[in-house]
Image (tube, rainbow, N blue to C red; front, side, top):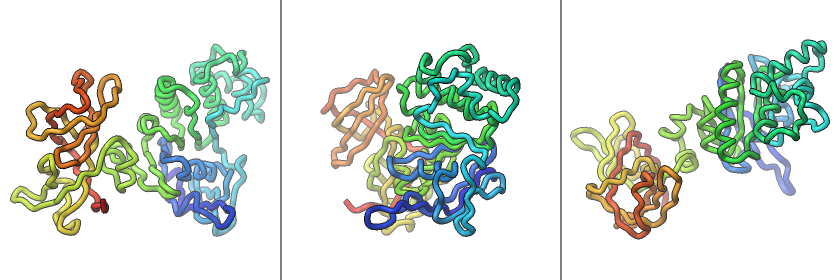
Amino acid sequence: MFLQIDNVSLHYRGARAQRAAVESLTLALPRGRIGVLIGPSGCGKTTLLRAVAGLERPQAGRIRIEGETLSDAASHLHLAPEERRIGMVFQDYALFPHLSVAQNVAFGIRHLAAAERRRRAHEMLDLVGLGHAADRAPHQLSGGQQQRIALARALAPQPRLLLLDEPFSNLDVDLRERLSQEVRAILVQTGTTALFVTHDQFEAFALGDLIGVMHQGRLEQWDEPYAIYHRPATRFVADFIGHGVFAPAQIVATAAGPVVRTALGDLNDAAECPLPDAYPDGRCDVLLRADDIMHDDHARVLARIERKAFRGSEFLYTLRLANGEELLAHVPSHHDHRVGEWIGIRAEVDHVVTFAREAA
């Protein structure tokens, strides 16, 4: 495995006691893959990134790249950041305003001969589509272009690992989406192994080969994007990712196998549906995402529209069943119903995901 983080913990000393910023975290990132850490503010994702970079010293655990130990709390080994051959891209670009674009890119490769330094800088600028701007000043370019300069500068020394800390957070939504796709294409083209930190779920899914969801310093799940969305390992991941609710349900045995009985009908997935004895009396909560709920005028179940949010191609409806249960549904925007109106709905669940029932 290329990047290996084993049982790493980092603690900050507060006014009264130490608190865990990262707690017993383990993950592995293969060579050439792009990993993304996502989670709420204060969950420890940036702290972990800084530990990999060498800017924070773990109090427990070990960090290795290509089998080389970068930090090991047990032996007190801690390589300095400049000895790790790791590149880093920050959200504020950190460009030098008094240097040209090409000089900014060449800043980290001053050990090369002048001709080779110029060649490498222009090669990186061509890679990010800014070869024409080599002699311009950073402030003459847009925010998206400045972030691409920062990426070119980080790639110029040919780092074995690239770390990116919320690199698009200062950009508008449309530019952020386009640039995330461009950056992923560049990293894939160069075979660069990278670890991102972001708070944006769409960005995480657009960028990552592997996604880690963090909560209160712990890694809740480290998995492929499809599994993170459709097979969340914990209730927190299920709640944090996407739009959905936890609906009360009961698992019952039938001749055709176990089914999850809900107010919308029976959900049956032979591959994933747990057995009735998985929970006391089979009672559980089932995850129903907004894309699991279909608007159907001919459905037997009716729901009242409580709220609606227009999202261009669709509405996000907040619905309430006659028994008081609340659901969310993505509905094509040409189905423009009024708040308070009753509409027919049905469940179309491909992945049955259940959790222990929480007290009301």
